[in-house]
Length: 242
View 1 (cartoon, helix red, strand yellow):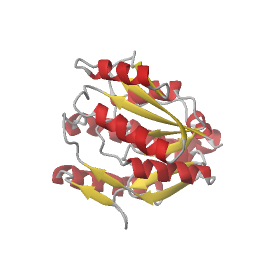
View 2 (cartoon, one colour):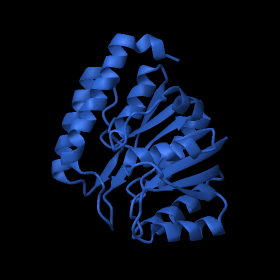
View 3 (cartoon, one colour):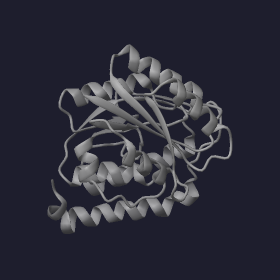
View 4 (cartoon, helix red, strand yellow):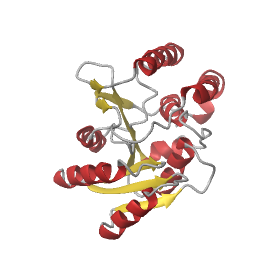
């Protein structure tokens, strides 16, 4: 199988080089057939120059621009339109995700899984320097989603997940232009009948740059997409089931 990794990047000059080097090194070590698709999301720093240098030196690294409105979700959607693999993982440019966990995802996909979701809040997981206010809000939102959808997953909001190509195609069209895409993708895959496996993962707060997630701006957008998926599940779910 060929695996793709979509990496949205907005002004990540301080971390993107280290992130790509670690990813390439680990995926080569594990002998995966892979590509990295980095989406430059309206960058105003040196991110694009760094990506251009990487792509010249390694054909497995491609970068594209998000030509639509700026936003995490739009950048990821641009990457999902570009990837060429049999499965794709969404990976954060700030190196908060672990290359070791990415390889575990790919092994699960090779074993037949349709989706692989990591959880930062189950036995075996590891969290480093998670801001307390974000932690409390995260736990509340994920508890609410778990009650509404009864899917058994306690970390729906985490962006770092992996999907077979047919799952991505089966979940279109995507609506979310921002971080709420991290909720839309897993909820749609569950509602539409795709099976997922859950593994413990690690997460570390970024070492450089600024988080792009603005909680005050995202609240209503998260709840919109949660409600949208809830209505699909209980009103027209059969129409979209695989």
